[in-house]
Length: 436
Image (cartoon, rainbow, N blue to C red):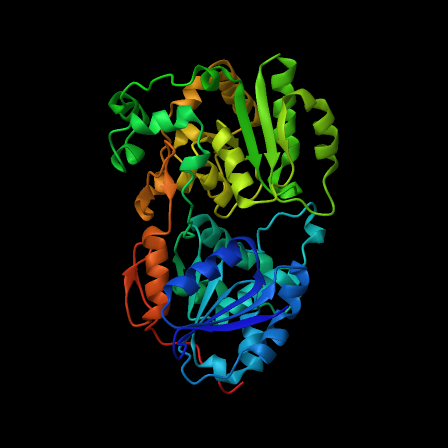
């Protein structure tokens, strides 16, 4: 069902989301709450491939005509080029395109499976946009650096210099994550760990050895909590790009070495579940605490709060909300030394090979208190508002990234420093396609 609603007085900002679900929905809802007057037009988060192909035509018929619109904001699922061609009255707005992910490097099992049209649509949308916003440097750099090779798939009459035309429009604003209060969900040892902390943001960005020296000793607290086996959580979509094969292979090695651990495998599931989940469930049956999608937000957060270590084995990640949610709930993160993760996490949370991941988990299985007493550092903490809530960890909230995005849309004439180091506004000359 299509949705269209106005918030505040005469709307100056048009928020468009062809895939209104997950992080796309969270961002639109956050913008709607923080922009003084806006109109929101969305399509349900179903059949992503059809949304990417056809949403522009559908939305062109439902977006109201409004003389007060000044700014159009949309995710890159929308073919912005088609929309402004179908609706010339929208072409004169200042157009902001937000990339949650990019289709030029989105992993597929075989290159032949990559549908050229999705990436091509994103390039066209960038050409007509006035500002192109990415949720990480990895997302922006991987997109821009892939345009030339991507266009070589065209057999002849290939367009030239597209990266040079698009790059000046690009900025990085980290995804503005918001978290609820989790105090009622924390086990006792995490509550005690918080009480022992004396500093706030400074220890997050300090070197790890200095951070450890600065911390006060933490009481062992509830001995029942401390005696439990290490609890590992994997909170990702059950799809091949999250590389579940590697995760389960490492866990089976831990089992073969007779190490004691618990595991929760949660996250969104779909109709086609990779076979590795079925086979691994039976092999790890004695270690499993939670299995499958958690039906409520509270249940999901409760699993994260109960866990000690959160693992990513992703082959692709443009931001990684699930990992930050787990860190917010007091989990020690272990991530690939690739993709977006080095932007956010310090080196001690990164691994380069499956063998390194296995060794790190093996150490933590033998000394689970090392994970339970640790205070996590986030490399990108200075880009966010860092809050402490109730877990002994970093909470990355909307902070400066969110505030800049609100100001950008509500006051297009304002300028601010983006995370590429230059000042940005929507006051620059805009692409005008009103004569299409």
